[in-house]
Every structure is written in structure tokens, then in C-alpha cells.
Length: 566
Ligand code: ADP
Ligand code: MG
Image (cartoon, rainbow, N blue to C red; front, side, top):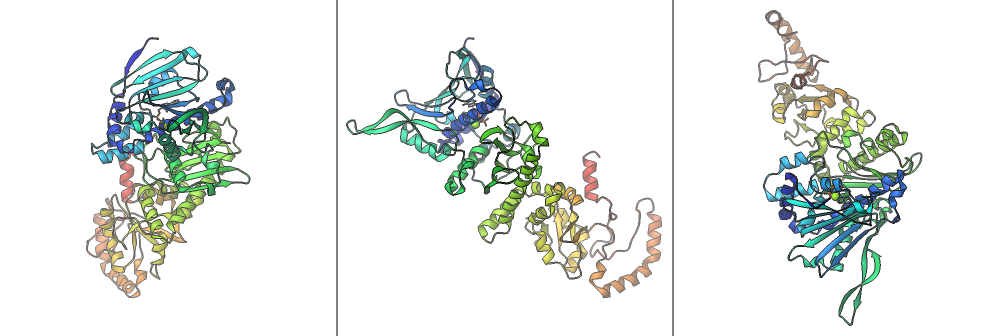
């Protein structure tokens, strides 16, 4: 087929503009992105070759090669991975198919700094090459297709790109960046090596460059014919912890998460016994912009004996931990495992339980830490992900107690909207006569805090949890006691607070007698509107309030269900 000129999808044009301007100060990341794609391409080939070993052709040793040409002013990244067909090239290098794309574009503000942070989170990918190049040439052939079905893709990163068929013997992809004016510092073996070691050392494939040697006659470095491997070339998670630096853990996190920030915390260990696997799990610093999006999947990559199997293996994590990123490498699962098999596998269940426990331990460590730094980390974690973790109260029966201990609340004790009080703190402050943990729920902290139900509690100095997150009511339907103390809504039934004060109790009884005729009369008047009318001692300023019966839905939940069309 002849050369064809095609237009980028509108979002790609927008992304290109944004990226070139906002990421220029961090332009060397383009190499990390291209190497990361080459490494993904090798993973995909290995995976497809499990069922079809002929895809390796006569070139079974997967590697990435980085080179440069001073005269032509180009930098090239070459891989012998899966490659792309013509259709794939057009689809993958002309559009953005990633999940969350819609949310990403909806959140762009036009403020360069904010957008730069967002774009970092979104992941810049292939297009980041245009930060340093004013033209990119991609030549590729998909594994299994004949040499005549090679493809050349060329673009200047503006509105369009061209594709044409070429003869290409080599399987895989060669990406050549034609550097912009002023980017010549990249035409240096030393510079490229140091970028590779900084960002891509953890890549499991060898990244090769030509050896260089000092030629004292010429007074410069000259390239030799021999190759050398620039990175460590072993999967990071398989290395002993003692041999991995903090920086390498952080770089690996950025590689798997598309996040340009450091992680908040991580845990790495090898599990042995009935089920054998390695887990490397990270808690991000910030919630992704699509944490609440329906199409969003989990963040764990599944490997089986070092072979990449799939992204987003949601079976490996309960949904209330969907913000966790990382890698699980199983020694037990079959290589040809599918999502369907995952659903039923006992090994997967064991991994899921193990991963869950490990994440909870990591969070407990932060939550219970002595140092101010770790305390601040936990507070930051709760702010970003607390609402998601609370789903676990309703979802994960086996770990409910542990999740409850991790939960933090706004209460009448602190009287600020920040959720900082643990249930243990609350229990420690309970009155000697107090047997229940009290809460009020409303659709905002303001509304909860100003609830008339609280008046008597404030007067008696009893702390009340102020619940206003959407998940709270739902979680509380399952989470009914903590440390042997039932949770009780201040808006429900007889509160029996008089027990807090005997004198008061007697006074109340006397008052009940006196007021009986009036109450009877009101019951009669309201008989179609209210199930019952009771004298109350809970209010101090308001004359009356509505209460739900014990076991009845609260007003808030009723309104929520109504709003959801139930
Ligand atoms: P991402 O890696 O997050 O999918 P990128 O923008 O980095 O996004 O790449 C877009 C897509 O282009 C990849 O998903 C892949 O399908 C394709 N691609 C890019 N580079 C290569 C490569 N070296 N070999 C094969 N496919 C590639
Ligand atoms: Mg990529």
C-alpha cells in the first residue's frame, strides 16, 4: 500500500502541545518511556509465544538496544519484541486508548503547573519523544507477519503522521528520534548511559549499547563493535532486598504506575509454603484521577515465574485496596492462566489473602509509627484513600477488625472536618457509664456537626463520630461494633442517656408523668404522620426532632436510596 497521511486524534494533539511545554524541564524521561514500551513489547511476545513458540523466529534472545548517530543527530531505541501491524501502528500511535482518558481531559485546567502534574499521573508514553525530537520515525514488524508487512510511521508531532509498507526482516520495533535544535547533549554515550541507569536500571531485559573506549591519539571516545549491557537486567522484584536501593524501588514504582511522584510506602517479600510467590506492593501518594471511575481496574501486574501474564489482575486484590500498585510473581500458577481460571484458582485465593494481609500490615506500621514523619504519611494516606479503605468494613469480614483500627474519623472532640480520630482514641475517652460508640451521619460534615441530635451529647461531654462520607452509611450497615461496643446512631430510638446521671433520671420520670396527657394528645393529632410521640431530654435548644426507630433506616440512608431511584 502506498504512503498514507492520517490525522492524530484530537486528544493526541492536545496532549502533545501540553507535554512539550510542561515537561520540558524533565525531558530526559522520554528515554524511560521508550524503553518501558520496548520492555512491554518483549513481555507481550513472551506471553504470546507460550502458545506459539514459532513467534520467536530465529531471534530468541530478547533485548533492547540504544544507540546514537552524531552526524545524523538521531537517538534510536530498538527492540525485538512483539512489534506492530499496520493497523496496530495507526491505532496505538495515533490515538489514546488508555482507560481514564476522558477523566484526564475533563480535569485539565489550563494552569500549566497543575496540568503538568496531571499529565505526569496520566503517563506520557510514546508521545514524550516529541519533547526532544521534531521528527520521529518508527519502523516495525509484528512477530509472525512476513517481512513484506513491515511498517514505517513518520511524524513531526504536529497534526498528522504518515504510514507506509516497508520490507523489514527484523521482528520488533525501531524508534528513531530526530533531535530538535539544541538537544545535542543527548548525542553522548555517557549521557545516555546515565539516563538509562537512573530510570531504567530495573528493566528485566538487557539494555545494550556499543562499548566506548578512550582513544588517546584522537583524544576522544570511540565506539567499539562490541556490545555492553548498561542496566542490571534482572527483574527487580527477584533481587534480594538488601541489593535494591531506595532510588531503584522508586524508579520501579514509576515504571509500573505511570505516576511521576514517589510512592508513599512499599513492601517487598517472598512468600513460601503452600503457595509460593513474590510480592512487591506500593501505596501511592495521591489518588489517581480515576479512582472512582467504573472502567478503572486494579493496579497489580501478574507474572508467573518471571513471565508477564497480565496487567490489572483484579482477582489478586479486594476492591477496597484497588489503589495499591505492584507486582505479584507466582511460582504455582500455570503460564497459560486466563482471567477465568484466576477467578476459580485456590492459589489465587491464597495470594489475594496474603496480599491483603501484607497491605494491612504496611498500613498498620504507618498508622502506629512513633515518628512524626510516618504519622504525617498515614494522615496523608487517609485523606487520599480513607474513603476507599472504609469500603472494606462492609466487604471484608475476615479483616474487619483490622480495617476498623485503621479507620479515622471526624468527631465532636476535635470539631474539625479532618478525619484524625481512631476508634481506639474514642474508646479511651468514653465515659465510665458509656457502653456505646455514638455517631451521627449526614451528607456533609457541617450538617453532621450541626445536627440537633448532638445537643445533649455535647452537654454531657460525650464524644460523637461525625460521619459524612458516602460510604459511611453503607459500611455501618455491616460494621456494628468495635472492641465489644455497639455503634449507635444518635438519631435512633431511645438513647437512655439518663443513665449518665441518676438525679436526672428521677427528674425525667417525674416529668414523664406530668407530660403524659399532652403527649397523648399530640399522638392523637399526629397519628397519620408519626408512628409515636415521645418526650425527650436530648434536646437543649431545639423544641423537637424526628428520630428513626431502632432497626429502621436513618433519614440520610432513606434519602440516599431515594436519590438512587430505589
Ligand atoms: P502505554 O505504554 O501506556 O500503553 P504509550 O504511549 O507508551 O502508552 O504506547 C502506546 C502504545 O503503542 C502501546 O500500548 C503499544 O501498544 C504501542 N507501542 C509503543 N511502543 C511500542 C514498541 N516498542 N513495540 C510495540 N508496541 C509499541
Ligand atoms: Mg508506555
